[in-house]
Length: 162
Image (cartoon, rainbow, N blue to C red; front, side, top):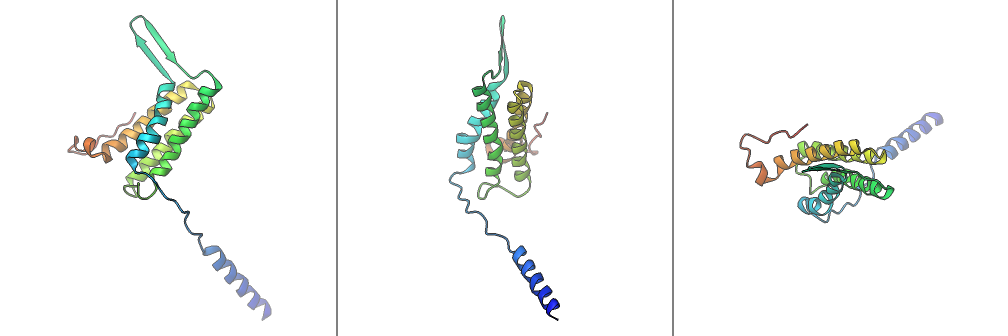
């Protein structure tokens, strides 16, 4: 009898102790999507986009690549900011919906993470490719959610992919 009572008591403690979820973190977004884009995401994406390029003009070709550890670190740090910004875009009140918006924010996380791996490997081609994927993630979201762009496409937004 004591064993049965003890088993019930332990089971109840485990059941109720493990099933209660902690309260959600006290997130407190301080800006909207547009300001987050202008002050955080776009400047960080620009660092990535401007870090690797082949610029051809009459009679010359400029190859732009990070060369120093500091330059590679700047690209890596910007990639982390882009990736983490995808998480910020998923937070209420920024999240526009629980479906496509979340998938597009995840695409930004994936592309930023790809850029981080490229920068950590000091691989300019990988950073360039990741920069293209950041562009696609941004453009796909913009054609769906920015009215000035979305309204240009009466039959729905195009899929801007590779």
